[in-house]
Image (cartoon, rainbow, N blue to C red; front, side, top):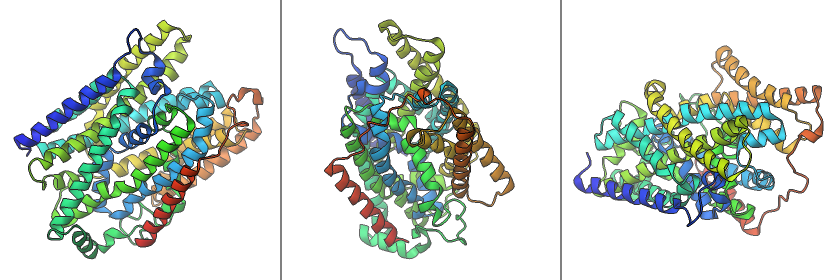
Length: 522
C-alpha cells in the first residue's frame, strides 16, 4: 500500500503535469484555437517533443503491465516488439514521412481519400475509431487500473474511471499540443522509474549487485533469455521463431508505426521533415532501452514472486518491493505512462471523427467559425470515446491473462490489409480504390478463415501469409479494374528521400546495436 509520502509524490506529480498541460494549452492574446492548433499542434513540434511523444503514446499500461506480464510468462523474446520497432521507425522516417509531409497529410484516412477515393477513407476511419476505442483505450485503462489497484489498493472500478477522466481533462483544452509538449516530462519520469525498478529488483536477486543479479537471473532462467523460440517452446505460437525477424512482426510494426493515426500524428505535426526525422531517430534509440524498463522486471518476478495468479500482475508486484518514497515516484511514472498514452489516443479519436467523418459529411468549408466549431466537435468526441472505453473495458478484457498478446492477435486480423493499401498507395501508381477495398475486406475475411481452419498456425505467421494474399488480391483487382490516374492526388514525383548525415549515422548505430543484441541472445 502507498504510504503518505508516496501519496504526496503522486499528488504532486498529478497537479504538476496537469498544470503544465494547461499552461502550454493557453491561447495567445486575441487568438482562438483552430483545428490545426488543436489536432496538429499548429505544425510546430520540435524533434525532442516528437520523439518523446512517440514513446509516451506507445508505452502505456498495455506495454508496461502487459509486456512485463509476457516477460514473466515467455521471457526476453517478447522484447522483439520493442527492438524491431526501432528498425521500423528508421523505415518510416526515411521513406514514409517524406511523402506524408510533402502532401500535407493531417490524418491517415485523408491520405487514403486523396490516393484512392472517399469510400476507403470512410471505411478505414470507422475501423480506426472502433479499434482505438474498444481495443486501445480499453486496454490502457484496464491494465492501468490493475496496476493502480495492486499497488495503491484503490478499488479497480474507481481506478478505471479515475484514469480515464484525468487523461480526458488533461488534454481536453489543448489537444495535441498539450499532449506532445508535456510528454518529455512523462517520458523522463517513465525511463527513470523503469530503470529504478529494474535496478532494485536485480539488486535484490544479486545480493546488492545489479550485474550480479542479472547474471544470476540469466543463469537460473536460461529459457527466459532465448530471443528466438524453438518449436518445442510452449509459447512458440506467440513468437514463432525466425518468423519474428523476417515475417509477420514486420507487418504489425509497419502498420503501427507507419500508418497508425495516434502514432504518426506527432510526426505530421513537425516543424519540417528534417525535424520529424530527428524525432523518429530519438524515438528509435529510446525503443532500444524499453525492454530493460519493461521486460526485465517481469523476468525478475519469476524469481522474486514465482506464484502469481496471473502474469499481468508481475510489474505491479515488483513495484510493491520498492521502499517508501521511491514507490511513489515509480508509481507516478506508471501513471504518467498511462495518462500520456490515453490522452494521445483520445486526441486521435477526436481528430479522426472530426476531420474524417463529421467534417466530410457536413461539407464544412474552411472558415474561422467552422474551424472553431470543429474544435468543439472534437472535444465532444473525446468525451464520448473515453466514456465508451470506461464502460466496455471490463466486459472486453476482464477474462484475459496476457492482454498484450490479445491486443496483438486481434489487431492482426486487420493489419495485413492496412499495410497493403498504404504500401501500394505510396509506391505503386496503378493501385486503385477497388483493389484497396478488396485488400481491406479480404484481410479480415482471410484472417478469420485461417484462424478457424488452421488454428495451429501462429498468429504472426498468419499475418505474413494474409499480407501476401491480400497484396496479390489488391494487385489483381487493381489491374482488372483500372481507373484514371487523375483521381490520384498524392504527389511522389518530386519527393526527396535523402536524409542528413546525422540520420544516416544514427541509423547505422541502431542497426549495429540490434545485430549485437540478437547475436548475444540468439
